[in-house]
Image (cartoon, rainbow, N blue to C red; front, side, top):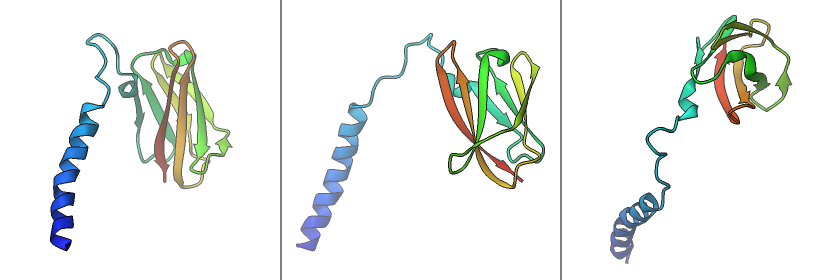
Length: 118
C-alpha cells in the first residue's frame, strides 16, 4: 500500500506542476516596462544612509516611507540628491531590518523593499 501511495505521489506532483505552469498569465508585451526592476537600494546593509535609485521616474515625484519590520511608520529625513536618486538618512535608526515603501502617484507604482541597518 505504501508503494502504491509513493508511486501515486511521484506521478501526481509533475502533473500538478504542469497544470499550474500552463495557467500562469503570459508575460507583458514587448514594449511594456517592468517597473519592479526600476528601484535599487544601496548600500544594503547600511550604516548611515540608504540611496534609492529610480530608473523610470523622477525623484521629486516619489513618496518614500520607512517602516519597522512589524509595520510601524518611522520618521526619517530624505533628500533628493539628483534627478533619479534619493538619500534616506538611517543613522539614527536602531540596528535591524526595515521596509522602504516607494510610491509614485503619476505612474501608479507602489513597491516595498527590505534593507538592513547595522
